[in-house]
Length: 113
Image (cartoon, rainbow, N blue to C red; front, top):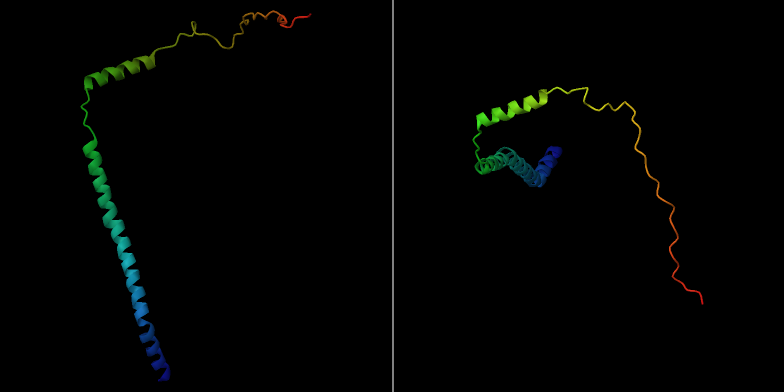
């Protein structure tokens, strides 16, 4: 009987602290839930709406696009003529390099008496 009385006394003594901690934990969990599932999606939706309104709509001229693509394909498909291209494996003599003449001494600026 005495242990039950001590148990009830300790529950009553620390009950308000436990209740306050429980309320704080529920408040933190509720705040986190609202932040993740309400605030962030609303912020992202607002950002998407702002970006969509700032994007300019451009109409594409399909005829011109087709011409450009055809021109690029023609340039890509041109054949390389091997006979006229330079062969990097053939050794050609290097051009002669002229060696500069020996430098001459500059005239002295001192005079002798």
